[in-house]
Structures are given as C-alpha cells and as structure tokens.
Length: 250
Ligand SMILES: Nc1ncnc2c1ncn2[C@@H]1O[C@H](COP(=O)(O)OP(=O)(O)OP(=O)(O)O)[C@@H](O)[C@H]1O
Ligand SMILES: [Mg+2]
Image 1 (cartoon, rainbow, N blue to C red):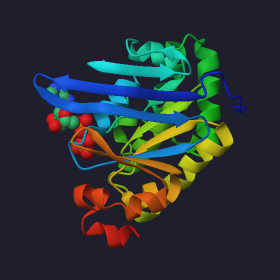
Image 2 (image 1 turned 180 degrees about the vertical axis):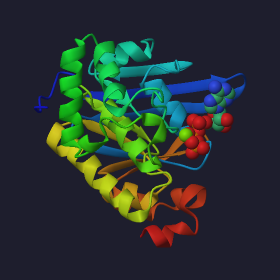
Image 3 (image 1 turned 60 degrees about the vertical axis):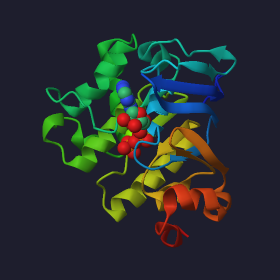
C-alpha cells in the first residue's frame, strides 16, 4: 500500500447542523481533517460524535451547512460514493459480516469497490499483513474475540487505502495494553499510509496521546478545539466533559 497523497487532502464540515424532529443533534459544526494527521473528537455521551461521523460518511444528510472533500461539496453523496472517493469508517458496534471469514470480510469491500475477486483477496492479504493479523484470515468473523473484531473492522476500512479513516470508539472494551497497541497502529496509519484519521474515543488519555488536534463536542456544539495543552487547560472542557478525570488525563 504505497503512500500517495491525492487531491483530496482535506475533509471538512462548514457550519453543519443536524436536527432530528425538533432536536438539534449538531449545531453549526465546522471542523477539518487533513491527510496524514490524527484528529481527536471527544465529548460526553449523546454529544453528537457519531452523528458527525455519519454526516462525514454520507449516512446522515446535514440539515444545513456543507461537507467538503477537497474543494468538492459532498454533503448529499451516499456512503458508497464517499467510500469510493476515499472516506472509510468503522462502526461503534463491529458490524462485520458474521457469516463470512475474516479474509472474505475484507474481500467483499474490495469487490464492492469494483475490483475483481482475485485482486480484492490479494489486497485483503496485504492489509492483514500490514496490520500483522494475517493469522486471522480463515477464522469466522462471528467467533472473534472482541479486540480482534475491532482490528478486522479497521483492516476492512483500510482496503484500497482510503484518504480518510473515521474510527468510532475503536478502543471501547479494550485493556490498557490493547489500547496502547491500538494507539500505535493509529499513529502508523497516519504516518506510514498518509491517511487522515478522525479518532472518537471516551479514553481521553488515548486521544490526547496520539492526536495533534482535538475537537470537543458538547450537546451538538464544538466547545473547544486545539492541541493537548489547550484541551487540558480549558475550563469549558473541564466543566462539560473531563470533570474529575481531568487530573487523571493530565
Ligand atoms: N436517528 C436519530 N433520530 C433521533 N435522534 C437521534 C438519532 N441519532 C442520534 N440521535 C440523538 O442525537 C444525539 C447525539 O447522538 P450521537 O449518537 O451522535 O452521540 P454520541 O456523541 O455519538 O454519543 P455516544 O458517546 O453515546 O456514542 C443523541 O441525543 C441521540 O439520541
Ligand atoms: Mg457515538
């Protein structure tokens, strides 16, 4: 998987709002993600993090505002169209094809993207090798331990090297050691593959350790953005989210 930065070097939202009935899930959210960087998105339960990922990946249309991939407005594109354009994601709950083995879980993404079965299997093997999990290839996805299921979800998203990868709570349920391994993997995805990674996590220590830039959502609004020091120093963040765990994360 050679690194090649495409023209789509930036994925961003400008003034995006999403309403469900009368409820404002996102209000005027502007954020951006560049190729090769790792950006964090944190916030309490129900803050709107998954909704923002859904907007960026075509699973949810914004009620107002724009989604831009490079200079192209893509807010009305389907998830499939956006995956073809290089925006991949994982889901909060695994969502592997449980009737298939691991290799096939990756290969169907490749055939879905228009590649031959043979080419897709080759790409799948190369991704599994790159992640050092080729030994999982022939195992049924249904029987995987939780952490392996997460890894396979990431491997599937890496098929045909997207430009952007959006990870929705990939460390949930992992041990501290597993979470540390995951953070090393995320850093490699950005630095070796040149992919822009958006990391949603409740594990604030993990986010602050691996992300250059962090956005904080609360009740659908971005209440803070900046580097580790800015987030840790923010009274707004402390009030809204970090609370007592602030000292811990520092
Ligand atoms: N399809 C929907 N219809 C109605 N309300 C929704 C819908 N999707 C999300 N919501 C609401 O929007 C708000 C934001 O939800 P979202 O799932 O984006 O939060 P989150 O930050 O990902 O939370 P968590 O940390 O629990 O995953 C919540 O109040 C949720 O109940
Ligand atoms: Mg969520």
